[in-house]
Image 1: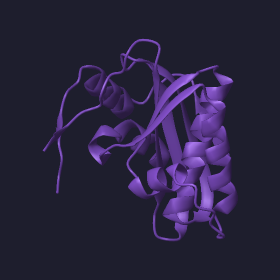
Image 2: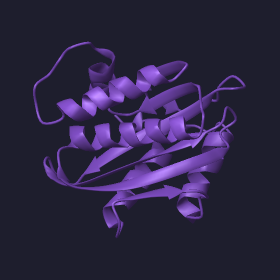
Image 3: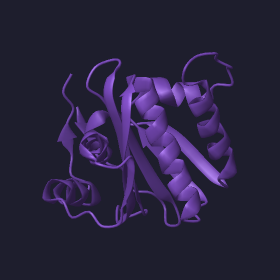
Image 4: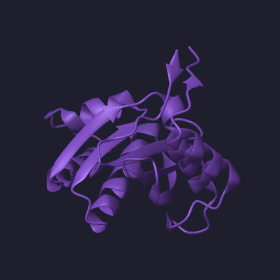
Amino acid sequence: TPVCWIKLPPGWYKLNTDGASLGNPSKASGGGLIRDHQGKWIKGFMRRIGFATSITAELWALRDGLILAKQLGISQLVVEMDAKVIVDLVQSDKSLNNSYFALLNDCRFLLHQLHRIKINHAFREANRGANYLAKGGCNLLCNFVVVDYPSMEELCSILDSDAMGLYSLRLS
């Protein structure tokens, strides 16, 4: 199945996030990026989380991305992530009592702070930029970094492919 990064109407921004965990639980990190309606880079971020589950890593990445969007004054935001379980958790009103309860509540609160928001599941092939940054978080010497410019060659190639609307084949 062909999959691509979808452009948005003018005035909208897209936040792609991803969490990475080398086991469940294990060494974890998160990352993501914000682009404008044409796919142009706005900002990115990476976080070293430490020992955590994949759900915790995904929630950290979402929280970091929402905070960054809010700091940038973005009011119309589409959030995409390849973790359907997180999309479902954030959109539900269930109150859970577990280790990621506080992170989940933070994400829900931040989502309600934005003027217009949509949160969607995206296939992994349409979330490659966020995946690249999330994996990079494992190698950080500090806990968190904002990436002002995408200087890594592989990331630039992903961004160019996305902005041009090039398709990737979805592996089953």
